[in-house]
Length: 199
Image (tube, rainbow, N blue to C red; front, side, top):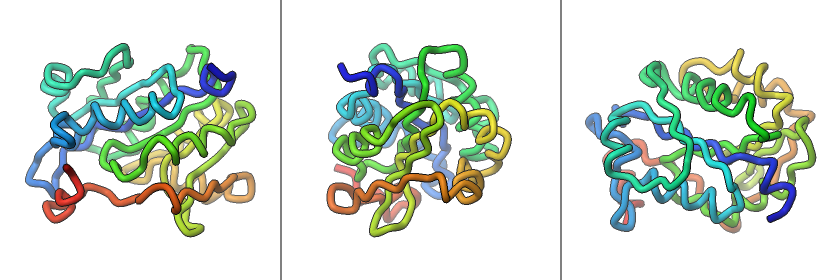
């Protein structure tokens, strides 16, 4: 296990209710015969994250029952309906007080982003001031690595569905972009038509 893998925790945001999917929670969508959240946790582990925190919201009880998430730390976000910002805040709060010095943040509804892209972003970690993002043809995307020094200010600006977007834009000069367009596809599972991406 490298030092990076010990110090960087995986943070999976999996609380969405799938409003545009007719209210089908994204975490429970089937992918390769298992819940999508299970696949996403596996990707973070394959990338080298030994500690994984999973933020649940919509149908949290059903996710706990149906998905095999191993020793992942499950964090329930009662305010999940407010958007991704509240889940990011809940996830970062759950990491405070742990030995993690950075969080590799991924989204449950992006199965086209696999362990190779995650590993590239993870490899750019240096210390708790690190601020790294995957890029696709030069455009910032996920996953995003947030050093612990950024957790409090990110949480303070994470509202609605924005997540860390405003903070990353404001600190773009410090942001390291890691091109991943050759090894991953950053599509989202947002609509019924997007379900075609799932296997």
